[in-house]
Image 1 (cartoon, rainbow, N blue to C red):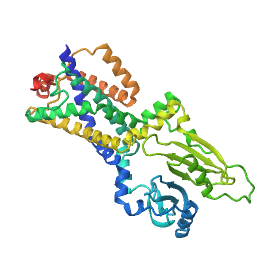
Image 2: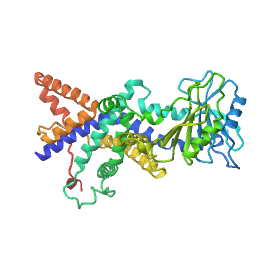
Image 3: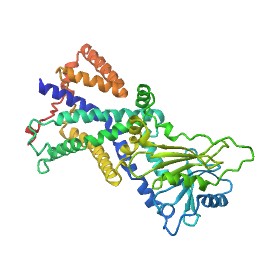
Amino acid sequence: MADSFFRRVWRWHFWAGLVACPVLLVVALTGALYTFREEIEDWQQADVRLVEPVGERRPLSEQIATVKAAHPDWKPTRVTLPADPRKSTVVQVERPGAEKGALPAVFVYPYTAAVIADGDVRSPFFSAVLTLHRSLFAGTFGRIAVELTTSWTLVLLISGVFLWWPDRWSRVWGVWLPRLRSNPYVVLRDLHTVGGVILAPVIALIAFTGLFFTVVWLWSFNGVSNGAGNFPRDLLAAPPSQAQSAKATPVSVDVAVAAARERFPHQTLSLTLPKKPTDSFAFTARSRGGPSVDGSVAVDQYTGAVLSDKRAEHLSAVEQARLYVLPIHMGTIGGTATKVLALVACLVLAGLGVSGMWMWLARRPAGRTGFPRASEARVPKLVVVLILLLAVALPTVGLSLVVVLAAEWLYGRLRQRSPASTTIETVVEAPVLSVPHELLK
């Protein structure tokens, strides 16, 4: 019975991996590439993004003035003031005729206030990589396909750990370390299993946090948690400036920068400039590593008074956890070390799909599909409960299970009515064994 249930889990694992493999490969490889987007863009555009620190930085008002002088018809809207002294100031602008989705910006040398060049906040290449990663260039349908694949990745990890679970924990080779001197199939099988098990916690974290950027799961999560899946809006909300007379003169932007720097001296500041008379100077602060946002500051554009000073540590536990979703998903949570770990996890995840397909083709008997045969083993009640919990926690998995079960029922009914069903079963079925470690010596 245990072996029969093992075969059943293997069959689930096989079919889920086979269906998810194409999308999983694309998502994993684009995720690996995007992990080091900032470093790659700095290298590609070093002449505009990186500067030589010489003296003191010029006031932001002077830097904005040079942008307006160079491009009178461009309206500055946002400014990034990097904490890193080797980075240029980035002034985002509203530019007539800009392409939809573009983030036009002007890069300024902060130590002389001279304009370096104009360009885009994110390179077109990485914009395409991100779109491919999120939606496969297929809009909402693509986003749901990516979500379904991400959800099933978690199922694949759980079933994979079950199939790996050793009878003897003291065994090292084939359990904790791959047997690299065995025959090619065993080597590939061990690399697939051991690599997946060792990095399963990291891959699971990346996959789970990725669900916060999907459609169905996030909508369901927000419905259950009263919007806890959304980025904490209260942290970013800036109170309006106090009502002033029509002739009131706004204070210099340098006053607002000084107030924000006093509160966040070592963080990168993102400033949204006022568009309307009632708007305030709105700052968000973030540091390298840690949460997405450390805090926010709002400064009255007429009086220079600080209207709000909000810190991430003052939020509720759920809201603070939400601030760590993006850093965990992208691997920036601990700086370069966790970025490397995320990169390795993405590459291993891609390798799991490729090696799984390779193993299936390698052991497939000539002239047969090599699909694992059905098992009549009863599913333990605990596993049934786990499946139901996963179906609820991962809505797209639950919906796809309904479709799969309906298809299997329909296929079974059709086979019962077909006089050639026995012949078909003989041709299609192949003795694909999910072989225990002891048989793979």
